[in-house]
Length: 73
Image (cartoon, rainbow, N blue to C red; front, side, top):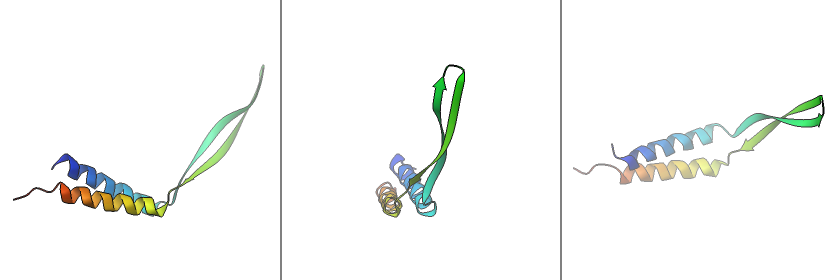
């Protein structure tokens, strides 16, 4: 399999995942107070939305890469 076809397959999988999972969430720990022996941490949940158009574009680009990377007989 050619490298461009492998890249296309990866783009297709990433695009489908982007369409299935609408956002990525993670928890960030930040130091709020650092005064000598007193240290206070706060946890804040962050959410990164994934636009649906990004998933569609990735799938279309992946299909294009697979098409361009196919072997000719």
